[in-house]
Image (tube, rainbow, N blue to C red; front, side):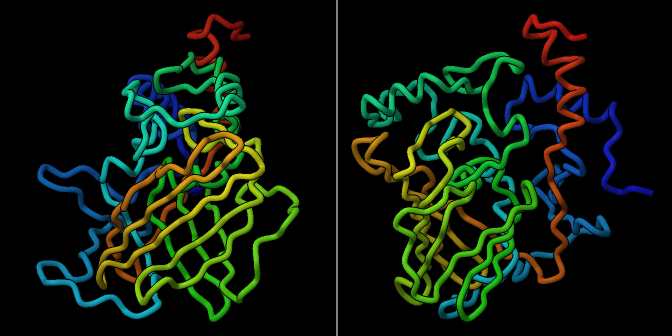
Amino acid sequence: MRKGFVAPGIVLALLIISLARPQTVLPQSGAANNQRAAPDAPVNVDGWEGRPVTAPVKGQKPARAPRHDISGIWDPGFNPLRTLGVRGASAMPDDGKPEHELPYTPLGREALNRTKPSSGTRSVLPADTNDPVVYCDPQGMPREDLYELRTTQILQTPVSVVILYQFGKIWRVVWMDGRKLPVDPEPRWFGYSVGKWEDDSTFVVETSGIDERTWIDRAGRPHSSDLRVEERFHRVDHDHLELTVTINDPKMYTKPWVALDKLRFDLQTPNFDVREVLCSPTDLAEYNKLIGNPVSGKDSK
């Protein structure tokens, strides 16, 4: 039996719900989350056996953070900042508020006007969007941090930090062997990343060389080949990690801006199984045939 299979009826139901609830993820295989709603609070559920997973240090004061160590399985829980990037970067959502208007350059404004997001103040109908992720392109950086950031596993070696993301089953390698970012790199979906310890509990990552086809967030904020992304992983104590993401792209924005501000993660047990969340082109085609194209007034044949 294929455990990763999602019945078409279930997929279509989720898609219909997604039209009313933008936080629902795109067509996927095995998209059930590790966490399920409970009357009072969310309960972590092991993705392999479906059994509740006890918090690492439940009811006790967390121990101090280990020195130079952010390894582990981290989960942001049901924090709204996790998946509610439907209106853009969590710290700067596309909600029409003047204080959230980004400092676009003329080139940045022009590039923004070419994007057609399916959410936010500039949203279009589902079949009219040109969001690359809708067509199962990789999210790239920094969008992997800004939309559908779910359970994340971090592995450390003497020369690198490896980050495993649940959404898309993507991994990144952050080099900490002293190398510099490439001067004229071949574009990559997730760019090139180097990191270093700022202090005993703060790991700072710089990423460049990101493919211009990606969007910064679901609101369609653009970037150029000059984009630099800074991630700050701060381990508050043994059981909690905070992530802050800053965007710096002088071609598109007149000054750097914070896209994610201290998103909190909780440490999970070492045997916690992270379920897969994958974009399925087959399910996407079926959705557009039965729902997306008809809603947008396009031929559904």
